[in-house]
Image (cartoon, rainbow, N blue to C red; front, top):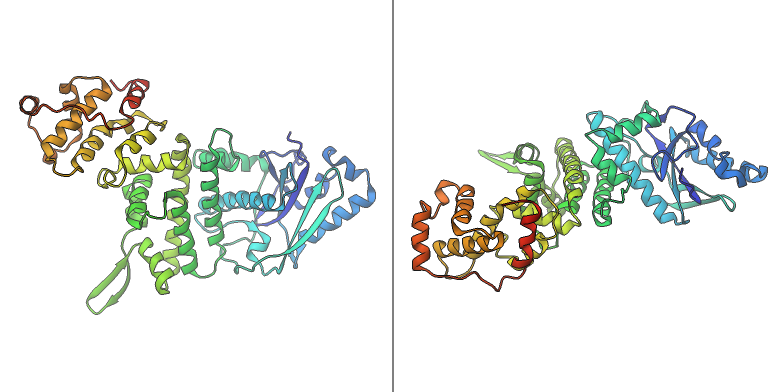
Length: 449
């Protein structure tokens, strides 16, 4: 059991925790959920001996919790308890957002977008947020601070979903959410950069459900996607959508991001996808219906879950984005990035060997992007470079290329034709490409011979 020094308490609506004997334990690492009755028992656990032995302090703490339980006349369904080692209110609130966003998004998914949960001050017109933080070495501390009013209720919170802590833990670890759960629990094996990105996107999706207007919802849902898939400010919507298509698959992409019919003008239909709609909302004040915002919600959650699953294999976001970009052969990525930089970054990617199968095509496209070089010379340079990297002969390298290129792209009918071309065009491997030598070990590591 983790013995934290500070415990912050946050009122939740939409979840009713079934009481059990494990209420003193932080079952989810640095947090747990408690029923309303259990919250008063919790402060009498052994960890709070300094409080329970002091009647005045215990009475004051219970009074503070009672105020939280009935904020602005809204009764809590349960309490989220977050443990920490430092008394940092910003960290405590941010962590509460991470947790509630994950729970809210999961409940939306399992209820087919009918039910959710929330921190009470998110859905009700509360002018002030009332937080109780307990320092086990000192007195409890209550702080009331201003908080912006966001919206009215959108999804169903009544009756609250009844669930035990054990059932919730099983839900979080099932195949649908186990990768998402790893980020929520901030597993040490996941790089901090990737954790922060996913959890920030998760919070954005949660926040969007608080908005009443579908226009604002759609904008924030697409923003949540951009957090996951945008690498720099120069990335346009086309590039982000290419990454999205590869990440979630063509079928899902077309289903959720098709050209939706917006309106008809005489005999002309106006169709736009979600990204174009977001642009029109932000820049032109366009209006959309709730069904489009609902589609954006589903798309953002699907992308979030897939990101959680795939990005675990990478060290940082740059590597993950490189993986998505280099798998998209239709994108002219090679002219905009130096190939040496691509290889240098690629060298760090710890992914399945199928990623490396595409290297012949990348080499060819790299050389083809150079000025004043025809496709035959580009192909020749790519084959010889690939032979050098893999330490294989030109024939095996040639066959690797031909297996990847579709018939309409094939440059030589057979190896004999290619061999003849080599004899007439003696070209050495371009030794100026940095990273080639360092890259060769990677193929051996994954037994790509």
